[in-house]
Amino acid sequence: LVSRLVLSSIGASFVVGIHMTAMWFKPKDIGFAEGFYAGWGNFGSAAAAITLPTIALHMYGGEDGWRWAIAQSAIVM
Image (cartoon, rainbow, N blue to C red; front, top):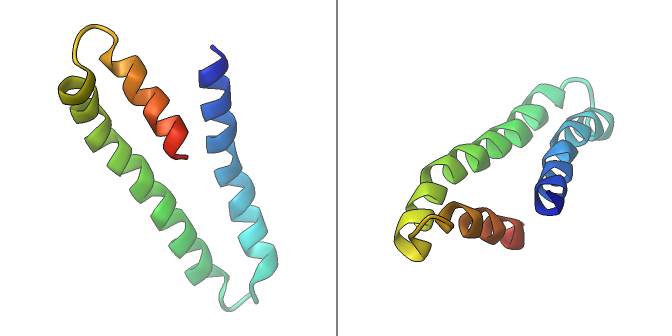
C-alpha cells in the first residue's frame, strides 16, 4: 500500500508539470513545449507497459515477480 502511494504521487506530478510548462513558455511556444513534455511522459508509460512484464517474468519469476518489478520501477524513478 505504501509503495503504491509513493508511485501514485510521482505519477500525479505529471499533471502539475503540464501547468508549470504552460507558465514557463511564451504563448506561441506552449504547444510545442507541452507536446514535448507529454510525449516523453506517455513514452515512459508505454515503455513501462512493455518492459515490466518482461522484467517480472524473466528476472524475478514466480508469483511475486510483478511485485518486484513494480518495486524496481519505483527505485529507478
